Length: 90
Image (cartoon, rainbow, N blue to C red; front, top):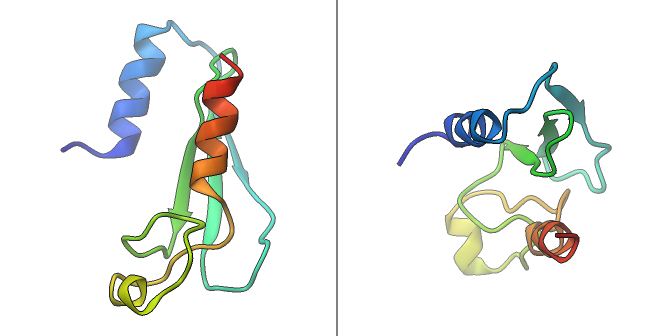
């Protein structure tokens, strides 16, 4: 498996995206030790959300004893909602 940044770069090239990448740190919704950085190329609908200090759980998932074992579960973005928003806009 390759890093997300490599995959995003490959898609950007395939879609002939141009211009400078926009990098935005999103406002924190809660203080859970995580933060979310949004990466996007102009003219390209896909967004890479970088979750800083997240564990290996689905961002926005319910925190349970099982997920705690996998590290912090970021509550600063709901990954399911972000995917739904992207795919429903296509």
